[in-house]
Image (tube, rainbow over all chains, first blue to last red):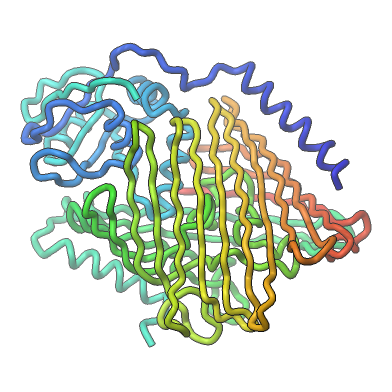
Length: 157
Length: 357
């Protein structure tokens, strides 16, 4: 039995380690200021958010606002394949996009909650945040719509 | 008796929708309700002439599942998932329809979410994922987590798959490190009555799990289950589990160990240990090779241990559509029925096509 184990698991494990060493990890963090913009509804009292809290919001671990009504947070963002969102997932959530999707599949089907809403364009993200008082959104550029406001994100994860 | 299980879905959906209130417009309703689902079709064929697999080679309409979440208010959520398994046709031995879970949740804070209803037991990594195959790399769940009998015939499940009762869930962080907990107090397992409707004894089962993330790449956890079980011939079930989930770039390594005992009404105990380790690597071309080693051993029976070594790969054909191909290599020691087979076991080919939305 153990001969069989050695014959199959050792090469497989070596292949995995070699593959990891030869391909760059996607989650390598730079310490720069985020290139994305975080927006909330203009009625929201929140002015700034620690990066750790932002990551926890997009992982479904923080679901209520601390300030104001303490209502439910409705996270939204552009699709995961888009540059700023990919950067947020890889650098600040510290998962690959595939791992992030897998995380939410597990959460969803184990009854843990529903994933952030994703939209194809920044205009749709802004419209959603403008229409939902508890919403938070991630976009690439500051919006001109005064129904939403930009909040500062502080620190790293 | 309560309503039949297949009616629970209807009742819970209706309750959730009513909770939205008559003022909820169509747009608002759509914002608060989400529908998701999954399905899987499998083909299995035993590769050796003797074994306990499927020598004919069979297609299996494995599962179709629907999950519904209703965010009735900012703090009230109803979550339901129902599965049709093996081509459920309602006749005897023609598949099954299961309410996998259906519960109401009230969020007091992120640290305290109170839930009531039917749950998948919060124990280890996989029980709550059950048969949502597109969420994990191999074709099946690890046998050591719930189907230990696939490797050692007389082995027992370390906990019931489901429980009806009250649960708590919370998320928080300590020093910037995330942690979470789950507790479920339920009827436990019953021998003669529907455990989702009645209990046979005053003692309630307790399942608990704590998880801690020392880094964003590593999650560690421990689980516990206790039940005054009424299964024939037994009166106590105790299980402990330890789990790890490590992500290094594109590599994911999962490991879990479960040990515990079941006490007979005569006072003897049956001790069992089960474990698995799994590694997977996702390439840019969406191919993920994986390997998983599973082990089950009844500690009081010498020489009955068994393993299953799974090697395979999956390919994400399109987003959330996976084709999986693997070999399951079952082997057992002398007192394990697997060990009595020529070569000490058998191999089985498994192919699966699974999708989620």
